[in-house]
Structure formats: C-alpha cells, structure tokens
Image (cartoon, rainbow, N blue to C red; front, top):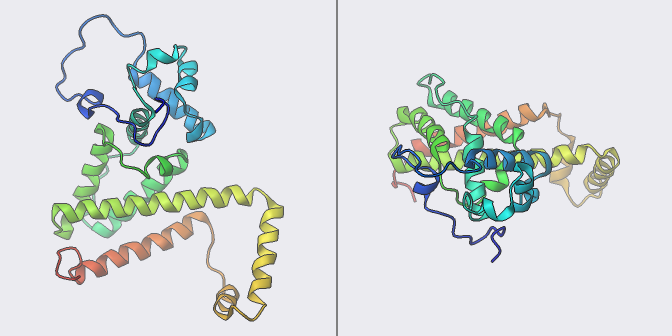
Length: 249
C-alpha cells in the first residue's frame, strides 16, 4: 500500500511519536520539525478538507522533499494521529470543575463542539481508532475528573467519555453538512417543497403532525444544547438503573 494510504497503515510506536523520557536529541539537528510538519498538515485540512492532506502537499507547504517527510511521519495514519493531538492542545484542561458532573460534562461537550467546528475534518479523523498523544490525554484526564462525582468505575468513565465524544463528532458532521446545504437556497427550497408534498399525501400522518407542530429554536447552538441535554439526562437514567455496573442487561 502506498504510504499516503490510510486504512491498515501500520503507523509507528507511540513512544517514538511522543517520547516520555525527556532524553535530549543526539546527533545532527533535523532539517525540519515534526511540529512544523504537523502544523502544515492541519492548515491544509482546515482549508481544503482531510482528503487534501497528502504527503506531497504537506512537503510542498514546508518546502521539503516528499521522501524526507517519511522519517517524521511514515504514513498518513501516523500523520493523522499527530494532527489530532496537535489540535487537541487547543482544548482547555485547567478549567475549574464545579463538582456537578452534569454541568461539567455539558461544558466539556460544548468545548468539543466549538473545537470541531474550528477543524471540520476532526469528526472524520476521529471515526477510526486514534493513538492518544499528550494533549489528548490531558483533555481525557480533565473529563475523567469531571466524572469523579458519579462514582463510576474507570471503565464506565471511559465509556461515557467515548459516548460523549462520538455524539459531538456525529452532531458536528451533520451540522457542517447542513450548513453547506443551506448555502444553496434553491436546494433548501426544493427540499422544503418535497417535505410539504410528502406530509400532504396522506400516507405519512406522523410526519405531517410533526411538521405542523410549533417550531423550536433552530439555531445550531440551541439544537445542540437540546440534544446534549437529552443525552446527559439519559446517562443519569442509566446510572440510576445500574446500566453501567452490569446489573442491567
């Protein structure tokens, strides 16, 4: 498989990507830095989308030969891991937690949404397993601390954070697609006419009733907040039923 290919690429040992020993680099100073290469890849993804990120384009951005980049990121999977952790450094991890896990979890979700809207390629990049780097781990640590008042065990806390992140990523992907569609007034009008015709055909009474109901605030922030409230309320119900301790099948 070409090194620019994604699925199935072997990647590198995480300890080589994010060494924890603090040992100084020996030998000749490298011509480029992994940080600069990663930043160039992030800038490309922000501007043109994840599909635009190729080793050739990243090399052009930093003024390097393509082959020289493979010593820093041997394949696209490794580069994606670096990119995800790079932007995770933007997420605050020192915010004071209130002790109210519901409020703290909602605040974390809103931070994630804003973060993914700044980097619309992130939901797709997170859709496959990623190796958590230091910035990602710092945010995870913050989220786990927010869940401490729940009394859940470690595995359940990790499940909750994964569920929350998946919810936010899916919502942002949908939100971004809707925003793109809204930029085409003709398409939006055609979709509205179609739904009106379907609701009036007599074969979809439930849909007709739903569409005729009083509208709710439809700003992206309001919609996200409503959905998030339902998710958090659902988690609270699950815990009350023992769904996270194995007592409910």
